[in-house]
Length: 238
Image 1 (cartoon, rainbow, N blue to C red):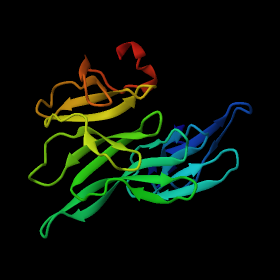
Image 2 (cartoon, helix red, strand yellow):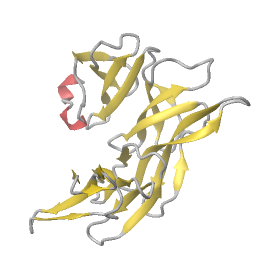
Image 3 (cartoon, rainbow, N blue to C red):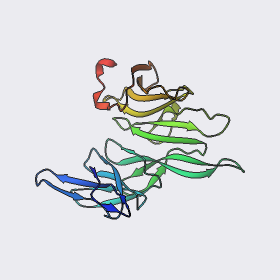
Image 4 (cartoon, one colour):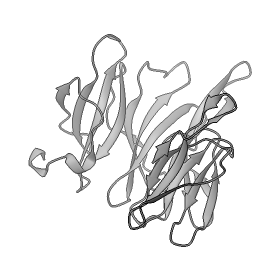
C-alpha cells in the first residue's frame, strides 16, 4: 500500500509499505529518501512499484528479498502478464517529428522481469501509446493510441489492440472525439469494459462502455460511470 509517513524536503512523500498479516508488522520498501508509488502484484507473487528517485520500476520478490530495476523515465501505471514473466508500461520520450518540431512520444515497453531487458512494442515515432493491459491469457494487449502527426491527429485517443509481441496492431474503437481509458478485460478475454470521455463536450460526464474484443457490439452501459474492474464483468453480458 501507499503511505505518507513523514515530511521530506518540505513536502509529503508517498512510499510503498508491506503489511505482513501473520506478524501484523508493516515495513517500508526501497530507499527511504525516494518517493515510491503505484504498487501492483503479479499473479506469481512479485510486487512492482515505481521509484521516483531512481526513475525505474522496482520488481520485488518478498519470498527472497531480491529486487530488479526496470528503467523508465515516466512512471505511469503498468500491467503484468498472467504468467508473471513480463511487465508492460508506457514511457514518454522526446522525438523529432520533422525538421522543425519535437514531440513527446509515448511508447509501450515490455520488460522481461527475470533479465530486465525491455522491448519497444510501439515501433513508431508518430503515435502516443498509453495504459496497456494484458488479456487474461496473455496473448493480447489492450491500450490507448493517439496519432501525433498533423494529418492524422484526432482530438481523441482510442482503444486499440496488439498481440503480446507487438504485432497485429489494430483499432477497436474509432470515434475521433472520444478518449478511451481504464481498460478492464472480462475473465474469459472476450470483452473489455472501459471509460469514454467526449472531448467535444468537456462538461459531459464520463461513460462506461462494453465492447467485444474483436470490436463488435460496442454498448454504452452507464453515463457517469468509471473505474471498471475486469473481475466484475458478468458472463451474462456476453
